[in-house]
Length: 275
Image (cartoon, rainbow, N blue to C red; front, side, top):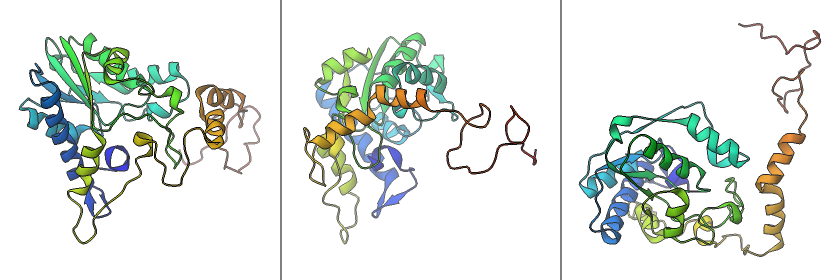
C-alpha cells in the first residue's frame, strides 16, 4: 500500500522508485482495460488527485487517450477514508475537490484513483463528474479490491465497511454509480514493483494483507483479535469516542500532549504572543 498510495512519488523504497512503479501500475491498468473492455469508448483519462496522477498519466498513454486534469484539490482537507462517520466523509469529499467542467462536458471519462476503500469518495466523485456534464463515467483503481482490514498501522476499517466486501466489480460499479469499474490485479501490482527492483536486492514478498487476507504475523479472519479490532474501529465506536471526548482550554481545540497551563483569563484560549 506504500507504493500505491502513501509514499511520495519521488521516494526510493527498497531500491525501487515509487514514481516508476506507479508508471508500471498505470500501464498494467491500460492493458487490463483493453482486455476486459476492448471496445471501450473512453474519450479522456482524468486522475483523482494527487496520488493517482502518475498511474493515470501512463494509463492514458497506454490507451491512446488524452490525459486531463479535471479535479482541483483543496489541500487543507485531510484523508477522507479515515474520517469517522459516513456523513462527515461525504461532506469532506465535496470540500476536498472541485471540478473543471470543460474537461467533463459531453465526454466519456475514465477516472483513475489509487484505491477504493469504503467507496464514499468514489461515489461522490462519480456524481461530481456527472454534475459537471460527463456523458459516461468509468472508474479504475491502481490497487486491487480492498477486502480485509489492515492491522499494521493503516486505519483501513473493518471488513463490513469496505465496499469490496462480498461484492464483485459489477456490484461495486452499481454501488458507486459508474458504468463499470476495473481493479488492478494483485499479481500485476506486485510485478509493477518487482520488475524495477535491483537484481542484487530482489523483492520477493510484500504485505498484501488488505488485498489477500494473508497476514505476515499469522492472524486469520475469525480470530478473536479481529473481533476486538472491529469493536474498537467501527464507525459507531469512533463516533462515540469523539462525542464523548471533553474539550479543554475553554472550548478551544484540545491538544492532549500539551501540558502548558491555560491562560489565566477565564473563558479564553491561551494567548499567542508572537502574532
